[in-house]
Amino acid sequence: MSAPPRPSTATRSSGSRTTRPAGNRPAARRGRLVEQPGPEQASSALTHVVAGVLAAAQALVLSLAVVVLPAVVAYLVGNAALAAPSDAADDGTQVRSAIDVAAGLWLLGHGVPLTADDVTVTLAPLGIAALALFATYACAKRFAAASARAWAAGTVTYALGTTAVAALAGSAPGWSLVLAVPAGLVMGGLGMGLGILARSDSPSAAEIGEGAEELARRLTGADLVPATLRLGLRGGAVVVALLVGGAALLVAAWALAGRATSSDIVTSLEPGWTGGIVFAVAQLALLPNLLLWALAWLAGPGFAVGEGTSFTPFGTVSGPLPAVPLLGSLPGEDWANPVSAWAPVLVVACGVAAAVFAWRRLEPSLVRWADVGWVLGGIVLVPGVFVLLGQWAAAGAVGPGRLSEIGAQPLVTAGLVAAEVGGGAAAVLLGAKLDVVARRGEIGEDLVSWLRRPAPVGGEQDRDEEPGGEARDLAAELGFDGSPGQDHGAPRDAASGDDPDPRDAADEDPAPSRDWARTDAYAVSDPEPDVASATGPADGDETPEERQGK
Image 1 (tube, rainbow, N blue to C red):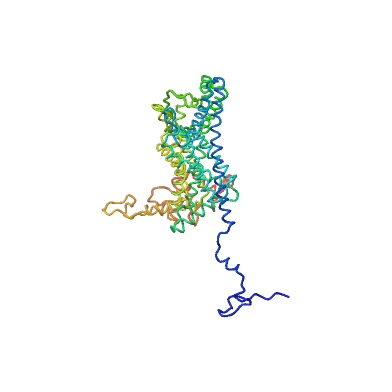
Image 2 (cartoon, rainbow, N blue to C red):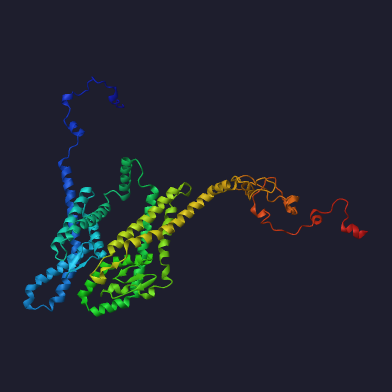
């Protein structure tokens, strides 16, 4: 037996009673109408905040320890044999000095200047910045929660920790506290954001982008980031990857070519095994800087390591350099030759590759000129911004005088990279678009309108007008208007002064063809065939056998 259907609420009148009196309804139904935060939700929010704080604190301690511990160990091992019993009271002061210098280097990687012996250093070792960013990313991915509260708590914690290190380190100037706060916010926010987005329980970057686009569309009523612009940004990311890969290969070639010079620097310093560890860490910290300088070398403007120096593919002007083994791999004068002068072509090739990447993901028949502009803009924007920020971060000073200018010029390098990438990408995109336009016949329509232009008004005879005064329709004659046009295979009249080709009369087709190989300009003249032998003996003519019998 089937169950009876439930009564529909639409059939009830306003005054009808239900089977249950109103006073006997459970109170739980009223609580479902308005949701109030319970103790579980408050506990979950507090858990997310605590998780973000712990992840940021752990990342700060780990990245700081990687820089501080080698410096302290190098000091203790280096001074153990030289220290006298009477100097034991000064060990604490010396260790504190080593910690301050190491903490200053860690802050320098975040963009906070370092002051030592009245010398201000502003050249940020980007390797330390990469270390801090990776530590924050790993800790956030492992320990933080996928929520905005965890991200905000971790970002603020990292900024407060950076400010505290700057306040406690004696190697940082007093005004560096102002820079420590935004540096910590940028580094902590970026690392925490990347780590949280990498978690399995967090939304993907595509979902976040779609949500942001939908919100912007609701607020503004327009699509602020078209799909073609997003495709162009992906092409720009391809350019950045290719540029970084090419710069890495160039740095490896420089290191192989200058390994003898670097070895001589290490031998002359005699650092020992502890000093060797410190030198290795220092060189790894400066390796990203050298990579960005190599990118500027590829683009053309090059870079400088001291005032009056210049390292470009067109020439090298060197000078005295600090005793750092990594600087021994800088390009010498033999790297400036006619072959290296073509180095900017590699940057143009990166733009070509990005344009091919983007065009293969488009539907050629639906691409408009505006779409080409959006794609080209995205391809140029990403490498331009990347080079601008990277060269700005990789430049600075390591002392007064000639060492106050190290690195490449950010604006010049970014502008040249954008121009070279844009030139290569524009050549591919515009060529592909014009090819599509030509296949559609749009160029043919423009040509037809030009060929059918009206005659000049000044009484002057048009060049395309016949001697008899009748205007020629060149479009119809050339077959650009879609009409059958003139049969170029037909014999000419007597007025032309040329003899007709008998092949045209034999092969004359009722429907005129557009075989350009059959025109008078491209026809190949063959000897006229023997009409009698081709058609056979006519009636009344004697064959050779009959003449022989006579």
